[in-house]
Figure (cartoon, rainbow, N blue to C red):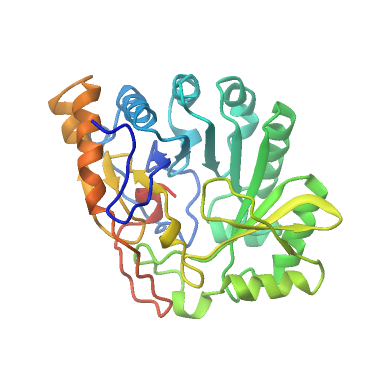
Amino acid sequence: MTDELIDDFGRRVSYVRISVTDRCDFRCVYCMSEEMTFLPREQVLTLEELGLVARAFTELGVEKIRLTGGEPLVRRDIDRLVADMGALPGLKDFAMTTNGAGLGKYASRLREGGLQRLNISIDSLDPERFRRLTRTGDLNKVIDGMRAAREAGFERIKLNAVILKGRNDDEVTSLVEFARQEGVDISFIEEMPLGDVSDHSRAETYCSSDEVQALIEQHYELIPTAETTLGPSRYFRMPDSESRVGFISPHSHNFCASCNRVRVTVEGRLLLCLGNEHSVDLRAVLRRHPGNIEELKKAIVAAMPLKPERHHFTTDGDVQVVRFMNMTGG
């Protein structure tokens, strides 16, 4: 069996995003509906199954794993799972995307378990607006969690901000200034058209990375760099700061030609593309052949031809994919 994952377009998969839960203690307006129905426990991969999936991917040459959700820190025993994955041979980059609210409790244990980097979602610095965008979130708790992570010694902390026109686009410069003050990076993300949200019209709230960049450049010089974290961010430096500014642009600057990523949902669906429904049921393999990593690796390798050449997101409000982001895994 090949020890690398190569798709039909010659792209090597070196990065897998693994969702550990569809549950979240926030209800962000661009991610899920206010009244969510979550998966029954038996449909969710166990910690042992998640660990085996991670091991299978690293044995197939994957160098980067990012844990996602929902919100990973609401998964019971998440620190134990992190410690198991953090010890995997061949894993060079181990990261997590979180809303940050649980970092006050978990930051030290996660770092001790081998987690190296964190992405923390923060879309507003105004407590009331933050509450409206997240429906349940406490901004102060997120900021305290970010600072706890910094004290715990994480190699790199990055803030993620989804910018919605008319909602928080007036805070772009403030968010950059906050990142500079805190000594962290920040990426601005175009809203993904996943799930049929009722809170807003995506056509009206769409804000391109070019628009965000223009807002920043009114105040700060941005110097393009070739830096990468194996993900889709295009990074820029500022002459007077160590903080980097990144842009993730699935609409305006799609990154399909260099896509090196796949996702595993908490149900065990191997998604070959964020913007398509091509998938393979790894849970069925895991439960048909318990503990058999070779059968799992065969299924992963066999799925590579399903990876499409590109996604086809639109900005006119047309929903291409019906699953919400919390189901997809960030």
